[in-house]
Amino acid sequence: MFNNEKIDKIGLIAGSGNLPLSIVEQCKQKSIKPYVLLMKNFANEDDYKDVERITINFGDVGKALSFFKKNNIKYVVF
Image 1 (cartoon, helix red, strand yellow):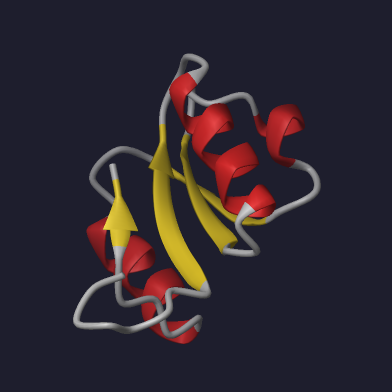
Image 2 (cartoon, one colour):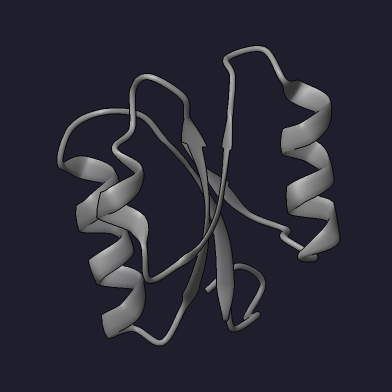
């Protein structure tokens, strides 16, 4: 993957639409664990019941960084 490093987990910042859900499904197929940061009032929490997730308000950068740091996330998709 990157520098011959196998990626086993990623962070995903999810808003509305199907793209974040497609990324989650692709991750599962490739044995990559997604850690999803849901944007309040944009992403539907019910769509992400089976993944590690947190919901934040837009602008809660500190909370987002803490979530990714706690889970040792090196790569984030937005």
